[in-house]
Length: 384
Image 1 (cartoon, rainbow, N blue to C red):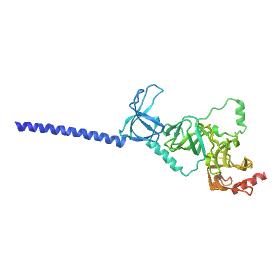
Image 2: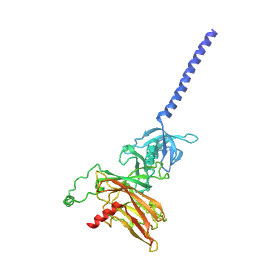
Image 3: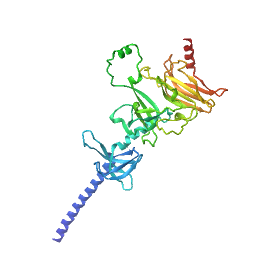
Image 4: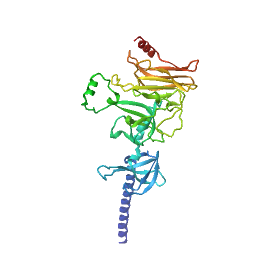
C-alpha cells in the first residue's frame, strides 16, 4: 500500500516537472521570437524625449533619451482619439542598466532600415563637394528619394535646420495647372513665351546633415521648403532673372566664405573675397528631357586696397550660351587654382569636364583662362 502511494506521488511529480519545463521552454521561445523577428532598433532624432509609462494623455516619464541614442522597438500602436488625431507610438526598450520599457511617439524615432538607407545615400555621395548651404523655412520631411510618398520619409526636420546642399533634381510636376481664363495670359503663351522652370518642375535638393542636426546623414528635401544661404559678400550680384545655384570661395573658405558674427541667423554675413559662381535662368532648357544645372559662370575678384569686387570672368557679359551640370570642383592652393565643370558640346552633344585656370597677373588681379570650347564660342559670338 505504501509502495503504491509512493508510485502515484512520483507520477504526479513527473507530470508537474514536464508542465513546468514546457512553461520555461515556452517563455524562452517567446523571448527568442521577440529578439529574432518582431523587434528592430531605432535611433532618437529629436534633441531629447521621454520614454513614457503608456501612450495615454496622462502617463509617467520613465527615462529621458537624447538624439543619437539607440532603443529597441518592441511593438507599435496607433491611437484613434479623434478622426483627425491618429498618433503612432512605439513600445521601446532602452539600453540602460534597468532596460527601461515604455512608449515614445514615432515622430521621435528613425527605424534602423531607414537610417541604413540614409547612410548608404551618404556613402554614395561621400566624394562630392558641397555646392551650397540651405536653411529650412518650415518643419519638413527628410526623404530617401526626391518624391512625395508615405513610405520614403526618413524623419521630420525642425524649422531652421541648416545643411549642405550636394545636388538637386528637377522633377516634372504630375498635376498640370488648368488653362488660364485670362485672354492676355493666353496671348502671351501663344507668342512663343519661353516655358518657366518653376511652372514645369518641382525642385528637390539632396542635402548633407551634421550629426548635431540629425542622425540620418543625408536625404532629399522639397525645394520650396528651403532658403538658400547666399553669402552677403556676393548676394548683391544676384538678379531676379539669374539666380545663383552654387558658389565656392577662392580664398579657401568653401561655400560659406569667411564668416562674420551676425545677430541675424537667417543671413550668412561674410568678409569680402573672391568667388566662382554658377547661375541659372528660369527658362526651360531641357535636352532629351534633362535640364542643365546651370547656364552661366561668374568669377569675382576682390581688390583689398580698393575694397571692391571686380568681374574677372563672365559668360553672361560675353553672351555665351552654356548648358552645364554639377558638380563644381575647385582644386589648388594660393594664387594658382583650377575649377572644373561639365559642359555640353553643342556640336557633338557630349557632356565633358572642362577646366578653368585661375591666376594672378603682375598687378595682382585675378584672371581666368577658359577652356578651348568657350574660346571658340566667344569667337562665333563676336562674328555675329
